[in-house]
Length: 383
Image (cartoon, rainbow, N blue to C red; front, side, top):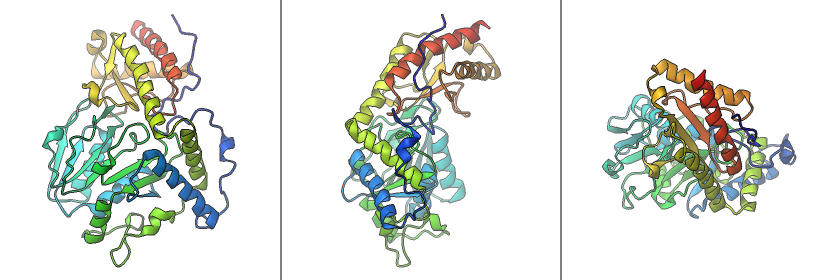
């Protein structure tokens, strides 16, 4: 039977993600539009955004945090271009974005001593094989595979190299062990449901030491440079003096999202909301025989970008082309009904669904969505 109850908010895209509950354009009324980001009020807004971020994440006092250009991608590449080359590098790859970082390191930076440790969609590489005398680059959560590292226990406390972590779909939704991470990057448009184009870069004291002691033998564009002519860290980047002009509307939107987060209980509440959303999907998958999680190990199952595969023998007997068409038809039916937008699997992933379960999504909307997915699949299968 066709369900009657629809999600209140049908936005389940994995980026840009759903706005926080109760959001409207009116929350942007205090945005400092028309004013310089370098004015006293402009700097105050930027620093408020960073202070809220620091508090929600529980960052150590000696970790720097700053806004940088070009979203999470810009923040990651800023770190790779500025920090790598002093040691060999291990890059962990198990989905498309981590694959991009491996290509950056191997093909663009052309570093000689690079080990790419790869696993297929749904799996993790052998974390025990990572060599922490080397620098390590990895994504905490694979946004396009729905697979995350289960914890930070595999990261050596006595590491010699730096650990560089792309955490854009993990921060504010998963607990991160800051003492084990030297560089962390993310963007507002994921778990906070913020606007795009701005990245956030977090540096440990060990990362700052590398910046000040190592000069890579490569050109660095202006937006990648984090040290001055004397090789000292440009502290202003981490005190609100952004490298280029940020959007004051985006900053206001991020402030609003973080004030909302503080109002519901802070960082732990955000993590709990994401976990509840995953649990709602898990309950449905457990009672549904035609679908399963792409992540093979429940311990590495993402609670944000949840990826699902179709395991019905009928579907498995289809050609690859027909499998892709079937998955797209399910997504199209849900879109046409105004039930769920943008939940198709990533283009390079196996055919299936990808449902964002980050902290701005309500678990009641996840629960309302599941019967509709059953209905859409039955409609497509019976067509």
